[in-house]
Length: 343
Image 1 (cartoon, rainbow, N blue to C red):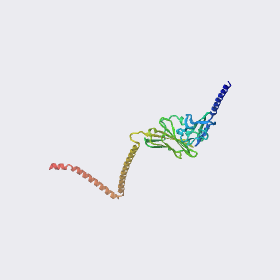
Image 2 (cartoon, rainbow, N blue to C red):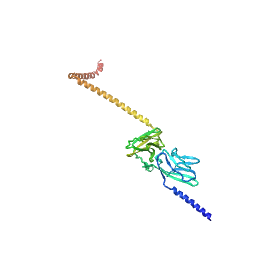
Image 3 (cartoon, rainbow, N blue to C red):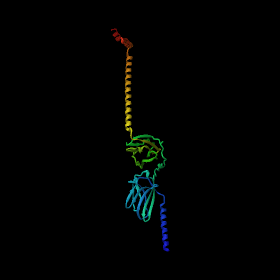
Image 4 (cartoon, rainbow, N blue to C red):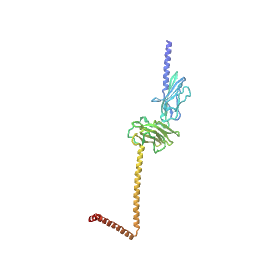
């Protein structure tokens, strides 16, 4: 009976310890500042054998990294070559992260599997303490077809194209966000350019093209072999001292078949050139005629009045002579027939 009571109290003590561990682990997450090379700590406080460490990003439990003493490490595609396990002690599951972006902000969950005491967890909240995000693109309502564009681009399918946000900034630019909105879909971030501690940070999330950032925080998207699916709206949001400013570009990709865009533009250039040449020739002819008339009038004005009178008489005489010759011609036209009749 006494042995049974000891086993009962021992079992109750194990349950109490487990509850105590769970109570200890349910605590506020550790706050970590978003910065290059940030460390997300996950150091198990007790001794034992480490079986596995896994990192996920909540609330979707998106996998980040996994460590196994026998099989090594594994990383998801987005965190590959950016995350490293520190392993300062046998029970250390902490990681460091480089090439950080604003999308790395969020809550991370670390789970350390140990033997014999079981799992231990740690939550780490990554925040941008310098400039918290002001907008949540995930809650933005679906767009409509009435989106206004500041510029329009037309591209021929299978060609290359570079989209730039040409905008005059008012104030100092700290960050530029490039977004894309395809038909019937919400805005999605495809690139970010920002200044971090005096350096330029470029973030490329585009699956169709390459995002480039310049020191002046001018962002551009280079598309190779454009497709119909690339048609839509592209928006740049500039965060400046004077507030946020946007610039929107609408891209239309011409359907295959028919007259190509380059051939169409060539026809336009040829037509415009031909019209310009005809207009130039017409202007030259009119100018030459006008010049001749001016020279003739200037010569007439320079003549002496008696010479002008003589010139007028000669002109009238020639005109009258021409008229008499014309009348005589019309009068003598039937003579050959008459003469033939008389003969």
